[in-house]
Length: 452
Image (cartoon, rainbow, N blue to C red; front, side):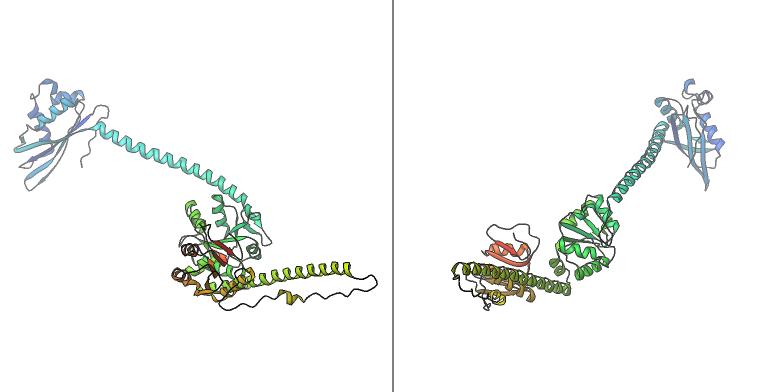
C-alpha cells in the first residue's frame, strides 16, 4: 500500500499507473523517464516540470520491487488539474517504453477523485459522531424516564394485611386478585397498569393470602421455573385457587413484556384443568375431595337452616290456630313440633335414577360423583343412560342418544357444553365452571358455586 502526501488545497485527482520492466531499475530511473519522455509531448501548458513548479502537480511517488531480474510497481501522481487535463496527462504516461536501460510498460489503472474519498470519510465520521451523540442523549432520556417511572411505581406499592405484604393499590377493593412471588413481580405488573396484585414473598404462604383466597377470585401468576411449581403446591394445601397463569418456561414474571403478561393472563387456566394438563394427579385428587367435602358441608348447613325456618313457621302457625279455637276455660295443650331430623329427611335416592325436579337430589348426586370422578347422563324421566369417567365423558356422550341432563363431578368445560348442544342436551349440572367463552341459550348450565 502506497501512502501519498498531497496538498489538500491543490489535489483533486490521483493518477495511479502500474509499471513493469524486464530489468532492474530504481526509483530515480522511473521519475527521470516520466519527465524525460513526456517533455514537449503535450505542449507548454501540460509540461510536467512547469505544472510541478506551479503546484498543479504534486510530488510523484514511486513504489517498486525487483525480483528475478524484473521490476514491478506503481506510480502515483497527485493532480490539481481538471478532469480533462488530468486524463490527458495520465494517457501520456502510457507512451513511456523505456525506464533506464530496460524496456518498460506503463498502464494507467485509474484516476481517483480525491474529493469523493474525502466525502466518504466525512459521511462515515459524521454518522459515527451522530450515533454517539444520539445514543448518549437517548440513554440520558431513558434514564430519566426510567427513574421517574420507578419512583412512581414504588410509591404505588402498599403493604397489606397483618403480614405487611407488598401489594398493588387495588388489592383492597378488587373482587379478584393476582398472587405473585415477590416485590419485583408487582413492580413489573404495576408498570403495565395491573394493580390488583399481592406477593407471597416465598413458598411459605402467609395467612393474609390464605384469608384473601377464601374471599376473592384468585389467579396465581407463577414463574416459569421450579420455584413456581413449589409455590403452587403450597397454595393448594393452605389456600383456595381459582385460576393459574404461567410465565413462559425459563422466565420470571418480573422479566415479562406487556404482550407476554397480557397473553398469560388472558389464557389463564382453571385450577382443575391445569392440574389435569400437568399430570398432577395427587394434587387434583386432593383438590376434588376437598371441594366435594366443602360442598357437602354447605349443603347440610343450608338444609339445616331451611328446616329450622320451616319448624319456626309451623310452630308460629300452630300457636295462632290454638289461640283462635281454644275455649276460655281450658288450658290449651301445645302440640310438639315434629323433630328437626324428621323434617330434614329426604326420600332415599333410587339407584340409576334422579329426581330432576329436586335441586337437593341433584346436588347430592353431584357430590357423590365428585368423589368418584364420574359424569352421568340422564333422560327426561331422570333415568340414567350412562355413567362415565370424567376424562372419557365427552367422547362417550357423543355416542349416546336420548340424553336430556348431564350431572358431572368434574369441571363444566367449554367442550362439554359444545358436545351437549350437539346432542340436544338441555341441562348440565356440575361442581364448578371452567373457562366458558360461549353458551347456547338452549342449554341451562348450573354449578354449585355460580349460575349462568
